[in-house]
Amino acid sequence: MSYSPKVLDHFQHPRHAGLLDAAAAGERIVSADAGLITRGDALRLALKIREADSRIVDARFQNFGSGLPIASSSCLCEMLIGKSLDEALKISALDLDRALDGLPELQQKRPVLALEALDAAIRSFRGQPARPAHDPREAPLCSCFQVCESEIEKAVRLRGLKSVDEITSTTRAGGGCQTCHGDLFDILKRCERGEFKFHISPAEYSAAERQSGISPSPLELECNPPAPKTERVAPDGFVYPDASPVAALAGIRRAGQRRPNVAEWKAFTHAERAARIESVLEHELRPAIRIDGGDIQLVDLQENRVLVRLHGHCRDCHSSTSTLKQGVERKLQDMVWPELEVVEVS
Figure (cartoon, rainbow, N blue to C red):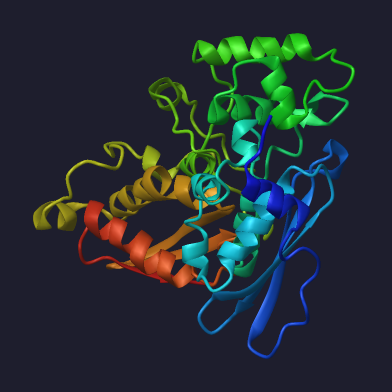
């Protein structure tokens, strides 16, 4: 496989490799890793960010595996310096492909580790939880490189992989003893039929499209199974509800129906009003909140004041106020009653 002169230049003379200098006053250094050293594809990206305007003032990378990510990491660091975090998150694999006259990772259908590390570093700076690659309780399908079935299936679906060799090139699965090759072939065939085992969130679709330049197929979007239930116990001890017990009250339909008029709302009992609010929380708001490892609990309803408590990662999140007012409150006002006010209680 031939590479462009720009790729060879960045590979042979990488820019911004190594460690960052100490941060000055008003600056903060964050770093994040991508890949796994046991698979031979590990990379660390460090960013020096000015806290006043969330702008990247310097960037460095360290490559610990194969030489494939060196050119893309060198080019990405050059592109990052001077950009805000929001601008940085708009950089895609296609941008790197144009800048390098051909991105090696795209040619080999490999993940762009530098972009994965960039996303993780910015989430760390913003106090957001890291996105796990797979359920830590899931046993590996490939014992040699410790790759789980969910990781393999998502790579097949999100990167358009068509052969066992492409799976091995992308995830390392099957690159050792090869005893899992039959399982890899089965995964390919059932994905071709749209028989998917694992849910892919909108955030994962968006990240994959940005990092691989491949849009999901209509079959992919149509057959994607529902999201799994969140772990029942949050870090602060809150037990996530499997279903909404209040919403099971007789005569209460699922949220999404028309908003009641004044007469209807005043005629509702306290339990019926709480049930309608709880139904919106359960079906319209909790799924999105749980994606980031949080949850919301209805504590009480006092006239038009909806008292709620945040749990999990949402509990200490710096953007929790915005989530409550711009997200939860607006949704409840739109779907339940326009005079509702959401108030957080500790």
